Image (tube, rainbow, N blue to C red; front, side, top):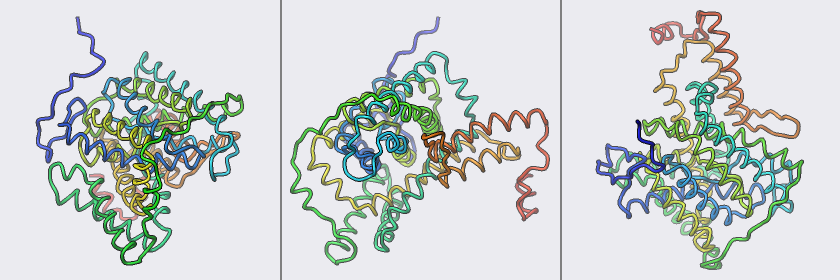
Length: 456
């Protein structure tokens, strides 16, 4: 009789070479290295986790605090088997705006309506997780084979690209500082070794921050960093909590976001699975359940809906550290950040241009991770169905093509994800019946000799 698997793996100390050997999910590093790597994950999630609540009229400090608690709770519910950071989800922005009439400036006067709808969304998402735990991921795998999941992962990176580029385009100085940030991060990634290389984002940001300070504060180029917010902020302070209001119309608008979260997080988990080289599918149900529970918990006190963060997946892609214990450390840092307005003020002084430069690197790595899913699974691009699925969904995602169902906005990622799933079900079935893949669309390439060489 097969022994029943324990909820948590047997964690063991990492004994490899950081230059060549990845740190696996069930391994842990010494406390010092874990702390700095956890801090790097806290840096990676900070920009987006603060931006999302600002766009919905929520309290960023409360959201940071709740994401820390949520990430630790996620670790416990998944049994420490799924490396992820839970941050504030952008998928809720359109639905929250529609449900509350929020104009996009200041605090949201109807935040209670958003919270009630988000709580219901989290419960639906958690229920989907329970179903997956009971039935397995077979039906999800059928809906989302490698061609679809690879596309979804790429879509997430590509969809965020225009926002990132816009954030560093306010001035020529900002654009150049984004380039400096990319160079700093790239230099750490390529020309260093060991633990220093694993901290490429943190050290790259610190280096570009110093360059920015010299150029802006000392030499007068660009907008100077304002340090007064640090001195004016208190060392300790509890965030302001809010209560949900349950309104049928608001719930109907926001609850369907659960479908987008399933698709989004499936892509995230597939990317992590590809990076680690481990089959994490048996734990996807736990992850869906955990994210749903944490979303409901967050909204019950005034926080945003939550999702696993692409930014932190990007960090794992470059550091090759997949240990789930690192995310517990990151969660603790986030809690401290949420409880300390002064610490939050320090982080808030990081110029948008530097965060944008780091985002270019991170979102690009996410996109490449999607392509890696295609390569690792040997996706057949001689089939017209495969070409169409990839082509249509990627352009929809990159261009933020969004469908509206009544007052519900699917968003660019949601629409492109739905397109990939539906096209896969429809086109692959049609090609199987046809039994041929002749006259492949790859012949569109005007260089026929090059195409022939590739096909052979």
